[in-house]
Image 1 (cartoon, rainbow, N blue to C red):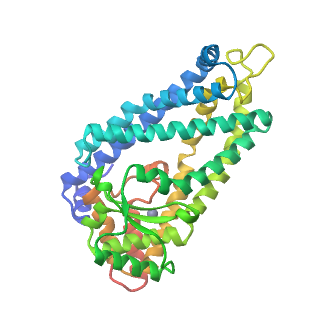
Image 2: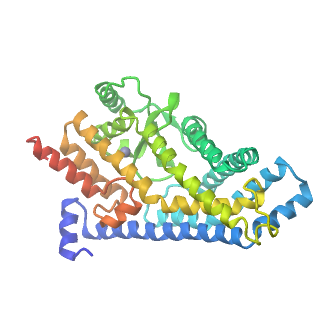
Image 3: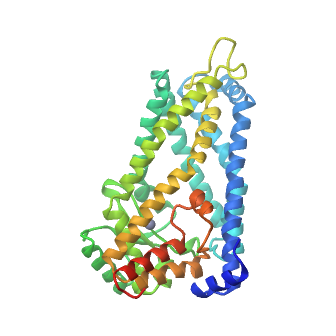
Length: 396
Ligand SMILES: [Zn+2]
């Protein structure tokens, strides 16, 4: 635990009041606490559906009404996904709306927030049901190696999702335009030219519609890749800091981080799917899933709750791996930014500003970073830039 004098020193170093730093810490730990409870709640709901025979009962009930075939699978999977979305709604609302309002970040009305939630839930249900239907088709075709087919299908879905997300999904929520401020647009274009990607697509997004949080990101694959900067960031950060943040995003772009992320995800999911299938086959022989001597096939809709439970549990346990890989990429992008835009003071000032604008707590303990953080902590990022600056004889 950090002592009051240490906290005061940290507040001074980051240019915020001690009260503000304490609020940042509450914002962080509260978010982690409620987020983890929501995750455990999802697992508990799935475990209940999987192990209390709900899959078998739900399938029989539905079969008596709409018969066998692909329609049964589609309606069953869409219904199951809708149920899960509803089970998570109170958590999404508490974490995504109430807390954000409490800390002064929320910009949407309740109705506006619910509309965004509904849109994203419907997209998730439609995409998930389509994925489930294709999975059922493959699992019937490959009754033994279905997990391998499912893996290939999921990787193809991740790739297709990455390609279409910025073109078809994101515009359903926000407006994407060229950077409106002429001076900033020129500054950003010069940075892209220096990075060797003069034609990189760079957009401004009106995220201030939903929230006062600031950010920038890279999204898309193949023809749809682009750098996106929040209008809140363009508004609140001085030009040298915007330039450093764009240089970081250009790092992701030039170093092909989205492809690397996809490759890492695919490589991690392969043994994970094998393990999930191994557990599934042992569970599927149990009497609650099938008649004595038989086994519930993976292609049966009644198997979906169990499959989803195994997938969610294994993915949750993989959190440190995915976050560790992401932190490595983020560090690479910081190093790239510093090479491209050798103004360490601007980088440090930008990272410090995140404490003020976004209530980012700069110095979480290592175990918190290890499990929860997909970026290095702000203290680590500021420390890295300061060390690099000293090594090259610049004043940080
Ligand atoms: Zn990044």
